[in-house]
Image (cartoon, each protein chain N blue to C red):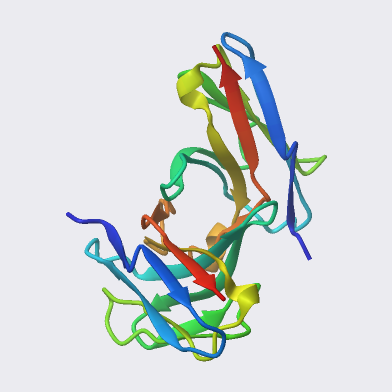
Amino acid sequence: QQQVKQSPQSLIVQKGGISIINCAYENTAFDYFPWYQQFPGKGPALLIAIRPDVSEKKEGRFTISFNKSAKQFSLHIMDSQPGDSATYFCAASINSSNTGKLIFGQGTTLQVKP
Amino acid sequence: NAGVTQTPKFQVLKTGQSMTLQCAQDMNHEYMSWYRQDPGMGLRLIHYSVGAGITDQGEVPNGYNVSRSTTEDFPLRLLSAAPSQTSVYFCASSYTGGVREQFFGPGTRLTVL
C-alpha cells in the first residue's frame, strides 16, 4: 500500500510562475516530512523539511505548507526558474522510531519553460 | 568526505545471474538503506539497516538480500536476477537520531535481459 500519495505526476510551469506539488499521508504517527529534489542522472538531495508542530516553513523560494487535520502537505516553488526543472519527492517518517526510515511519494517531474 | 558511493554505475545481467551492488559511506551514519526507482513508482524501500549486524525488510524485499558487517558498507545482493528487477538502485544513509537528512549515492542503473 502507498502510505504517501503525491500529485501531480508531472507539471509544466512558465518561468516566474508558481509550482505546487501536493502530498497526502495516511499514518498519523508520521512526524517528519521532507521534500527531496532529484536532477537527471543524480541521486535525490534534501530540499526542505517540516515537522507537524508548524503549519508552514519557508526557505528562499521554497515553502512547505502543512495541514495536520487533513493529513496533507504541499511544496510551493515561487518564481519558478528553468534550473528548478527536476523530479521532486515528498516523504514521511516516524521520527520517534529512531530508525531514519523514510517512505517516499511517487514523485513529480517539474519542467519550467523559459 | 566522499559521502555515499555506489558501484557499479551501470550493469547488464542475464536472467538468473547473480550480482552484488556495493554501497559505502564515510559519514559514520548508523542508518543505511536501499531503494529502487521506477517510473511512476517513486522510491521504494528494499532493505534497511540501523547499525552493523542489524537489517530489516522494506516495502519490496523479495529477490534481494543484504548484510551489514561494518558501519561503512551495506551491499545489496541479487541472487537470481529477473527482468522485473530492471531499475535504478539508490543507496542512502543518515543518522538515526536528531536530524534525519538522508544522503543518497549516485545510483546504479541495472538492466536484466
